[in-house]
Amino acid sequence: MSYAIVTVNRPDKLNALNDRTMEELDAAFAGFAGDPATRGVILTGAGEKAFVAGADIGELSTQSPVEGKERSIRGQGILDRIENLGKPVIAAVNGFALGGGCELAMACHVRIASENARLGTPEVKLGIMCGYAGTQRLSRLVGKGRALEILLTGEMVDAAEAHRIGLVNKVVPRDKLLAEAESLLRKMLANGPLSLRFTLEAVNAGLEMPFAQAQYLEATLFGLICTTGDMKEGTQAFLEKRPPNFRGK
Ligand code: COA
Image 1: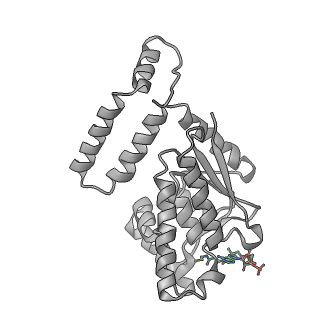
Image 2: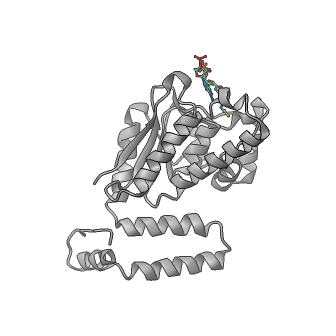
Image 3: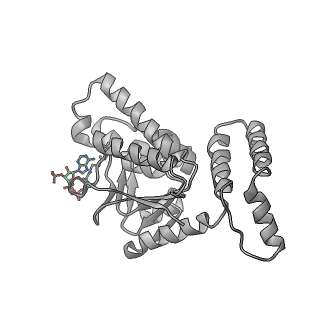
């Protein structure tokens, strides 16, 4: 069962996302999308202090309005690519996840945090605002009221509070973080790859549709999955009391 571990690696800048790092992330996830051997991804940050402490403020400080808009659209597209990978992506949040780092973690499907993690969107303290869909994903994850409190104060929440409001799924000691993320990903990857793909699609696309339309999408994907070998194999394996051997076909 093969999966990738992606580490944002600029620890001297708390893994801040400059344009080059964003391009590298984009290329990595484009590669995973086209590689059937990579069944899922864990995303984390290098060093002891940070997952990602935001977009690179040095680059942001000199941008023109047009460059700012383009950077925002580019970043949103990269995070969309992660969210729509069609394979599970888990953020292992090992410290500060701020601004673009919080937005990056929210584009992942599940977030596991270490006890020292602190999350937030401090952009307003810099006289800017979220530009990688943080206003939208945070509101959808924790609800409008809690999202606006975080977005408008720019204050960080600690791991326990992030867990309480549903911003992260689980909090574990720092030295257990990667093992916990791997264990969770392995549980997912034991299931049918097409089941995972279609479920991700139903949730991601369905949440943006009216309920009846989303139900119809779900029914259509359910019909599609009934055509697959994995459906035959999974149901047959249950009836024969043996583990399934899914092929993703
Ligand atoms: N962009 C660019 N550089 C950053 C950065 C960012 N988002 N976040 C941290 N860094 C750099 C610091 O400038 C510093 O670099 P230096 O050693 O060359 O001076 C280095 O990373 C270490 O950060 P430092 O501030 O010294 O660590 P700290 O432990 O005192 O504070 C934070 C940690 C996270 C509270 C603080 O770095 C911070 O507030 N960062 C910015 C967070 C932010 O506003 N993110 C949203 C950006 S849109």
